[in-house]
Length: 77
Image 1 (cartoon, helix red, strand yellow):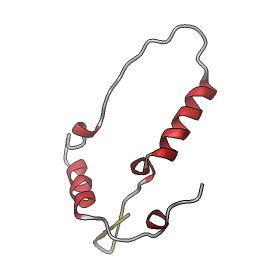
Image 2: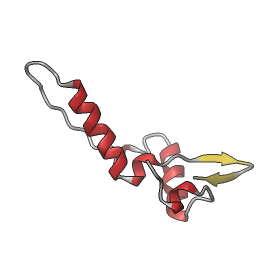
Image 3: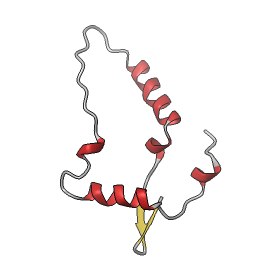
């Protein structure tokens, strides 16, 4: 996968990213960003279909490819 230039470059988090990161560090702070869904499947489970679906979702949505870290007191993405 070829990453867009703004993804390939690493740099400081935006203020919105920093706020979300800090909120998620608080107890229960990330609950608002999790959507839960339960489905009961009957019959054989097509694991290859689920894996392809997950890979496609990650490919399409930049936020699912994001990772954050702290270096020297600075937040980087």
